[in-house]
Image 1 (cartoon, rainbow, N blue to C red):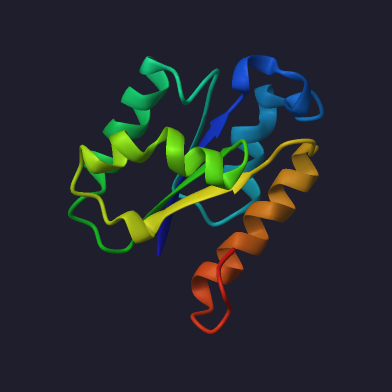
Image 2: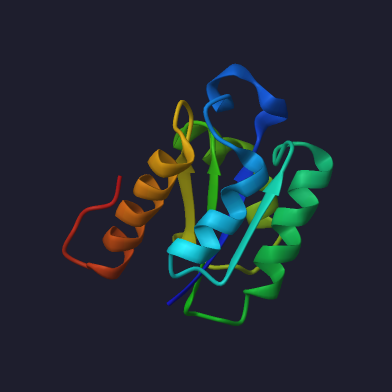
Length: 127
């Protein structure tokens, strides 16, 4: 399993104030088994959707790749990224939204770690 993570800074809004976005991608790549981590100032903006689309397209033919977006509420992400997901042939069951609001880098790492464990354990229900 390969995991690519896209982290949204949500324009630096209040719920993201606890995270150090300057070091978060490095922390994720250093401490977790992910193949890619990057921070974008606003994933739901046009340029953020383009980055997401590029990552999804690059993984279309790889059934072992998951794309995790670390941003706002998971339900909101599904709505915000629905059009981008439909514009690719990426397996939508491998799209993993994760809520990172109000968390420090350590808290975000814990949330990602927990979700990675869920992905590798087929008996554990997803959120």
